[in-house]
Length: 150
Image (cartoon, rainbow, N blue to C red; front, side, top):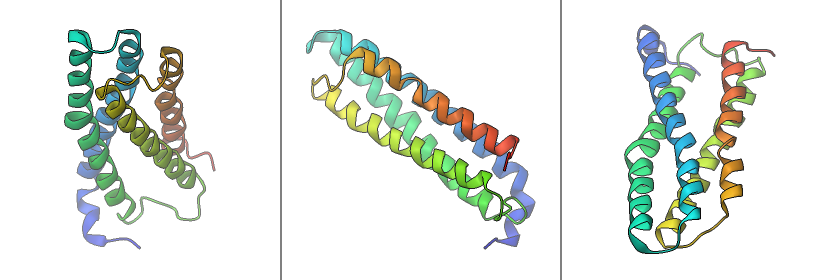
């Protein structure tokens, strides 16, 4: 199903979608890095409070709105005539990776709340590894959208 009235706005929607994706990715790459450093400090104290504030603001002011905009604008693009060849397989892979990215976003949100409660849900090694997850998903998503290999 597509909506013909969306076609004239395609370039603007695509540009705004890309801006939202870049903003979302910036936050998704930075938050696990903050968790690496946060997991290294002693519970309580001034440093802990500073990390909690930084993590909360990053999530609430940048990551959450950027994800919402990414999804809204992405769905708008999907509903624009001629954007998706529904028989092609690339968009299924892209959608799966975007769903995984959204799930990872939820995982980070859950852990931000744990850090705020002065818990240390995982060690710094875990967060160093998790810091690579958004990059790997982004690589697959970009290849699917630009190259459309299948």
